[in-house]
Length: 135
Image 1 (cartoon, rainbow, N blue to C red):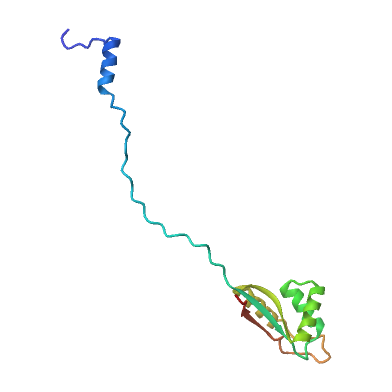
Image 2 (cartoon, helix red, strand yellow):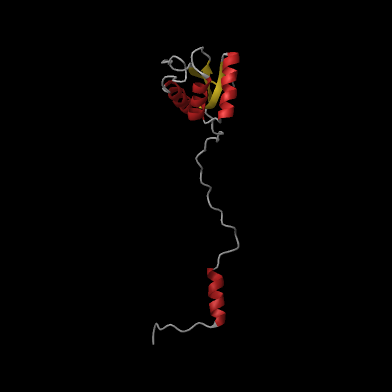
């Protein structure tokens, strides 16, 4: 038969493989240019704010303590100590945290309602404001 394929001998097969095999040269792939990634900065922390309660002669200790327990999460003992500090120094930091939560706490304290513990009900809110914590 003309053009029929004859099976290769083992020697012919090895010679054919050697002819096709490439030399032992390391393959070098082109380097991709990477996009320069900006240097990662540490995340910026939000500034913290103090909620400050002011002293007045009309609101009672019981009202201040109830307010601090309800809106700032203080225990009655801690709230009493803060009420004493407010009475002695004229003001006290009653809570510290992010600006958004500090604003919420300020608004909640202002919206507490009248002081019915007083002999004559006090209808104006406690003096409260927020200020940035010193750096």
